[in-house]
Length: 118
Image 1 (cartoon, helix red, strand yellow):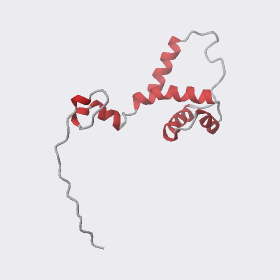
Image 2 (image 1 turned 135 degrees about the horizontal axis):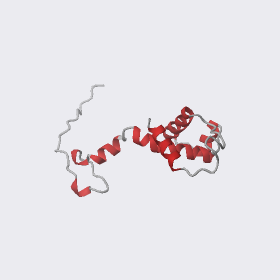
Image 3 (image 1 turned 90 degrees about the horizontal axis):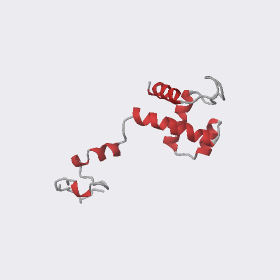
Image 4 (image 1 turned 90 degrees about the vertical axis):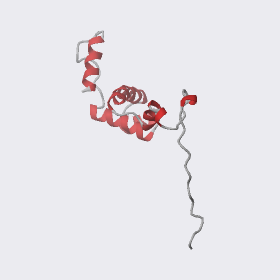
């Protein structure tokens, strides 16, 4: 759904030289483009190696990834680190921007069992 909204927005803002439907066809289908983006996020390969895996150029791999990254960023939940940064006052984790505002956890005593039965 997000993909279709973005496509409609791009098409409405596009200045056309060729007729609609003209030009080079995409080498990868939507499913393959999405797999490419998720594969990159998981493995963090170079775009050259990523392009070799999917049979496209490194530039096309980079463009495809950056296109889908915006959509995935809006659809998928934020990473746990980003969620902690948004609510850092709830946790005792200082962030770069708000080091002086963080709370610390109450002191806890951890008991260690020093006697080991072998």
